[in-house]
Length: 200
Image 1: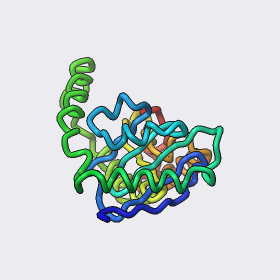
Image 2: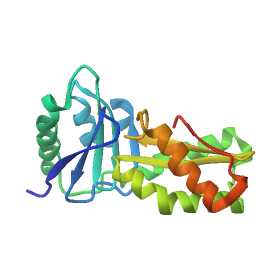
Image 3: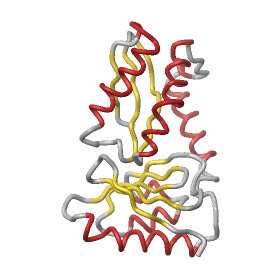
Image 4: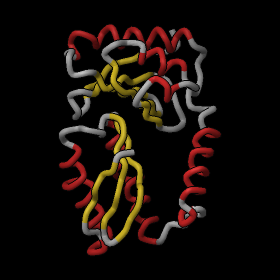
């Protein structure tokens, strides 16, 4: 078999991380409904299971949020075997390889709507924030089956987008306040007043 999968719990009790022994994707994507996964049949197949609420695909793992009417103990083995079977029926591949064009198109459409963000040039502090998020926060968040993206910085407030297991996680507020916010304040000083999450 090409792929083997193991399940790993996350701080979010509704989300389980299924880790592959091979890379699955070169970018992180979140799918909140099957129609968003048209270009990735593997993700659509996982959505065919009645207890799957949302899916987050990244590097070598798939985080799955279940419906709250069922316990992980009842479905974890079935889900792990199902994912392994789908992956091994496909050729080894980068599942997000052909997503770039669509993503760029969406970004350019957004830019057309908001001319102020046409050619985004980040200020020095924004670059520092992004650098710190990438170096210190992203690896930890990915380890928990999620992702974090920088959205904006204005009047001392850093806005970030939480995805995957981090979205809706009971401990995400603590992570934001005690982890991310304190790190940014420590490294960048008084310019940072608060870190808040917005919906992606």
